[in-house]
Image (cartoon, rainbow over all chains, first blue to last red; front, side, top):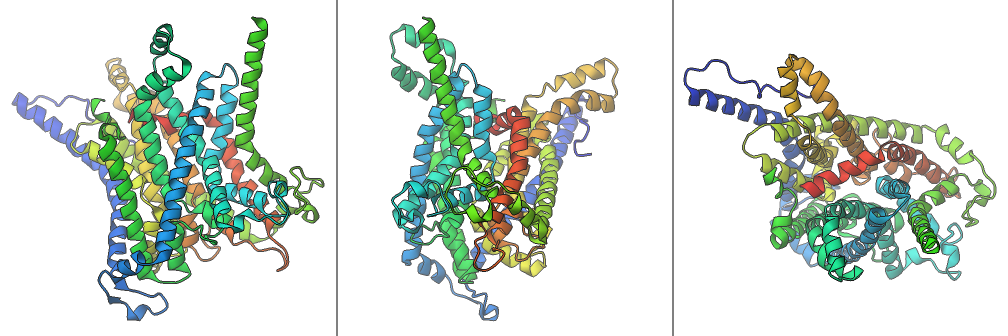
Length: 314
Length: 277
């Protein structure tokens, strides 16, 4: 029902003029193509473009959910309020720190994991099965596992610490544990993307470099990494944008207390605790702009390697 | 020589063990917690001393969890079906037909897949209250389209590009009707990709937490990840640790089953789009 029978490969019947028939066929193909894409495009725009437009509108209003009738246009003052607030900047730097550190650690660990899976002489299957578990598991479940592990008395990891230590209640240790939870969960994804990139590195090239006397590290740095650049950049882009949205782990581990909240946590709290739709929307728009900037920077810096741009040749 | 080979083997065995332990120990820990007798929940042991199913009995006794489980399954399934149907149509067009705007479509789905969900939560919260779909199944299924549809289009286009579509022509030359060619040649070739995409999309919907806590307020539409966060102990002096652990294990089971049965396909689905663009 969902996959229409292809009608395009059947040649058009007897046509009066050859060129006219061809362009008629091409036009039909074009129409069918657009028709098939239309529902998906309409839905995607309806669920993203429309709400973000509405968020921009709301962000220009003074809109307190407790007094919905007093909503009024206030221009950019919500943005001014957010950008001059220390909460926004603390959340922003915490988010940036979590993003940069976790993506960097994941890249190194992910590479190690990918090399293990690529080179292992046995047990590749079971390693791959095992690392799919962190990837697939519900983030909230993993976050609770970590939270209980670090809770004094309950947790086996907390038991390893000197008594009286509650790492989740102190800013720096808590941020470290949030990064740990993020790294555990998403390194497999990084590793699998890098593994797929490793498979594209020709074995002969590596052997040739070996014959020429290149050490293992030189082979990795001068042959493997340059050839894998597209895969590495895609993995970095995906993970950076994903890490910047961090919410689930923080919500469960610390609820954003003790200066551990990310920008997503801040937006959520403004909406559901402070019930301020205007400010909450301004934060939403600012986060959207941040993510857009990160994506833009990646594509600008590494343009040719950006996902989607290589498919032209296919 | 043999000694070196053996050492090599031991080295790999050790490496593999470390990796597998790394991947599984948080899962083991939450499972261990869920099997602990309530009196030993706070003993900090890595292995339960007294095993019990008490925590599981507890969560299945109240409708809070069972209702959330039904919500989770229903919402994730419906969102998956819609995303895969619309995604298949679009991906088929991208792989098979010549028309302008293909690259725009792929680029757009990628951009939307990267959309920060929190940016949608505040406007959706208001829109859904106005439309009266706040705290309903459609109220979650609609926002799930923001990530499930781009994921489906992206993954399916990658899969469909690999299909040897010429086989269809060959079947027709051999005398098959278009319907037969589709049913006997194309559908079997496309099915694994569609199926894999469905699993990936389902996992993503199953995983969602932010939309689920923001756009629901009662057990009417609350999914398990959100419901867990609202669990309370059976008395106000009791922590809900055991119930949370048991519920967490229950919603992890489908993921483990998918991973065990379809790991090759999941890996292919995850990476094909990203690496081959």
